[in-house]
Image: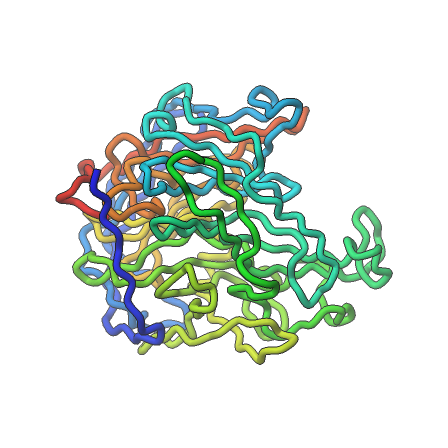
Amino acid sequence: MERKKLAVAGGIALVIGGIATAASVSHFNTNEAGKIVVKPAAPAETAAGSGGGTSGFAAMAANDAPVLGLADSTIETFHDSDVDLCGTTKVKQDGPVRVFEDQYNVIHMTVSDADAKGWQWHGSVTGFTNNPKTAVLDCTPVMIGNVGNTDPSKFDQKTWIQGYYFDGTTAWAYGHQDFWGNRVNNDPDCHKSGATDGKPGCWYASIATWKANPVSSANRHLDFSRDGTAPGHIAIYPHVQYPGDALTPTAGWIGYGAPSNIFRGRNQDGTTDNFWYMYAYTNSGYGGQAKGVCLFRSDNPADKSSWRAWNGNATTPGFTQVMGNPYTTTNSTCAVVQPTLFNTYVRSVVWHKPSKHYVAILRKSDGVYYTTSTDMLNWSASTLLLTSDSDAASYPVLVDFDGGDYGDDNFDRAYDNGKLYMFYRKKNTTNNNLRITRRKIDITNYAADAPGSGNPG
């Protein structure tokens, strides 16, 4: 099968003009065991962007926003930590699943566990979509993210896989890196787990990149190592320098973390704009950085220094904010996108071509929600997709296994051709059993958008 790769263009400071268009919002209710109840679409409405006014992005001449629903009542277990063991080792999910397809048409799906070990399954589209699945669990970890570096200026203590970029031969894992002061020789100025001491947590997050060995036709195993020398990260908090213990909040983490998947941007006609984007969350709202999600952009995600954050200009938006090591670099804060909506992590973003909309998935206290946008800054009111508490459904993401070919190696499109799933973690609090669970998703107001050489990514 011929594979069509995307050309990457330069010009990171590109300014994009345009005015956001309205998006119709439809609502439905469902629960984990029941049927979907679809209500008629509401009149078109426009969601306010961060800072008010129009976004300045080139919003599509869009059709009605896509309406998502559970395709049926079947709840599938993709992986059970108590059943599918690696010897005596239980592989337990502690982050979102991420997927890419290599140049040999092999799909790789990874997840990190609580100790920041990365694990992968590999196989074909059929292997991943079969029930029961026949994709292979690789029992050699693909990443040892628990580096344990106690030097706070390196921001290199413990990293979980959170996103992927595959350039045709090589994969980069984008990680959420945590630095905890109480891991560092029991720092007396930092809060100790389980104690009531009123001390700050000394908890700092950043986004780090790890690079895999080149994928070969004979070896499906991935082996990630740090991409360069720490702290050459994508995003580090611009002000705080540890151990500024007295300045840090007693709860929440400072910095940028929990990135979404990496997805391509689109022009007004739906073609790719030669940039890649991701959302990252900033947790504590500390030191001049507003709490919420920031939008980052790169013209080459293989180069971690190419990422820039949106500067918040809603009229002529630019991507100019560099996020370097705060010990050596003077940084600016990044603007947050629609903070009343995105007051939690954006776990995944996919593109739906027929409607010319992006679809974002997020987890709230009462369930999993989705929201839609034509320009990445103006998003619809969130719509409930699955009612659940966080134990029943955490780390929700959308994966369409029709993705992979025709320039869609990083699975950032929703084709809705029978292989679109929501993956999430289901926890049994009685015995701490963890299951990677999935539900089939249907876009109810559009016909399938089957991929092919005439319908490239």
